[in-house]
Length: 459
Image (cartoon, rainbow, N blue to C red; front, side, top):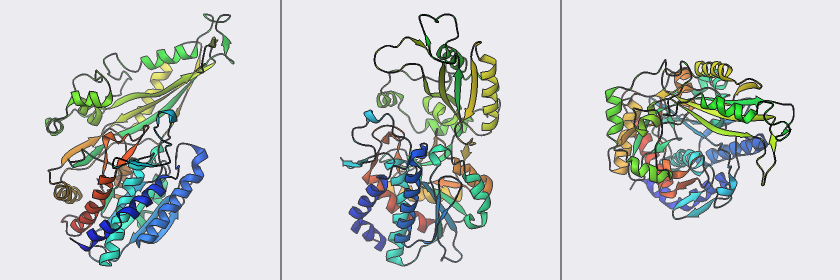
């Protein structure tokens, strides 16, 4: 057993306690009242990196949530790896569906239940702990390391483009490794090689200047909720096709190779339905559930509200209604173009009697794809195969990690996803959790990955 393995074993309890402390900070980036908690989480990360032996630590101002940077650059003639993660979390609503307070972590049955445990605080802490283990035992690292941890991934990383532009020399590297991502199953490794892009917006519908008595005024003016529902229904067919003109124009048809690669995973749709608690799958005809989730563009309604929603009855015709929509996009779809198409559609299908406004709600992000045989993937593949004892799958994700495209477009480097969350861990939902076994296995895997990258050809 290597010295670093003994170090990880000896510090298991301490590392778990530190993760719990980190999770207790309610760093919700979407809610302005938690701006102070975002700053506090960034300071926690900076202090923890310092304790690990990482150098050059600084908090980079962005004009928004901070980025925490650190480095260790004492491996001459070895590649420079930039490790990415994020310390912000999703909101916790609906709170009443949680089994315990979201930011008071509960350890039960080998799992840590709390918001941010899997996405991404538990995962982003792993490479810091692995770095500490190597420095405390070997006194050095096998590669040069830079660390880049942000506080606004969950709201689209809107301040990062300008920051990366202004810090290109500081961030220069040979490869990015993301500590945000997934494995396929607890006993089955995978390499994420593609993320969807993102376009998000809010629709606000305005009718009469105040809520009206639905008996006195009902049937005489347009109801904003009815108008909004009609508008939303115009965007998607009953079968699941998106009906916005031009939406599919730039989508490249799925290749036989892509379809074979996805089919080889052997996704059980019956088990999938049971896991989700539904009796029927739905979506664009002609594709499997995994194909729709991973490699076909989607339009989803995320929220809709308006009128009276309290207990009992209140007979009003509401003065306004609202909806939030996200489109997940595939390579070659331009999120700004999609937004323009949505606005055009909304203007065309707005019913008479209401005024509608549209506002973007996250920074647009294109899709990301890394070649399966990229040298960074080769190293990660070998390590996962060694650690799990199984051949990894190549997988995609319907979610978005904007920074992957930012690093590729602005630094000309690819990002390898090397993280240990699982799909069933309720990220973005009540009762989010992270497996302690994944937390510990990830630390070992990162130590092995850094050694493997030090000898990897092509970096």
